[in-house]
Amino acid sequence: MEAQQGSPMSMLFIFIIFGLIFYFMIYRPQAKRNKEHKKLMSELTKGTEVLTAGGIIGKITKVPEKGDVIVIALNDKTEITINRNYIAAVLPKGTIETL
Image 1: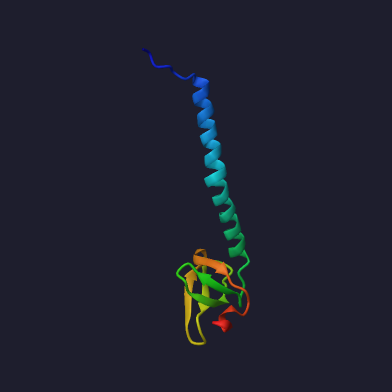
Image 2: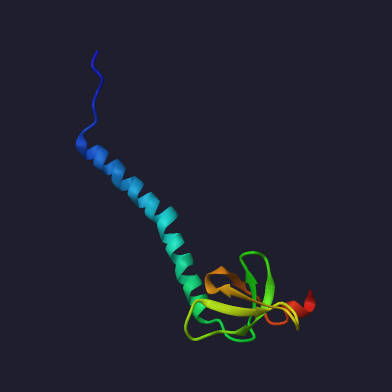
């Protein structure tokens, strides 16, 4: 008995289906998240309350025009300098006071 072989067109069709699944399930949502994150980074201003990727909550005190770093105040005496890309979220105003 000989095994049946699929036609080359059916293999091409399967590859196209997998390509579309990859695009709509993985690539497109990731590209959308990256676009939203870039927009978020461009809108950072002094006084904005943020959450860092490391879980630190603080208020932005300095946003240099050039460079990729910002300065965040954790309290009245402590400031840290971090890379803009490590801002995970912008918090609603007043979040720090409620903690």
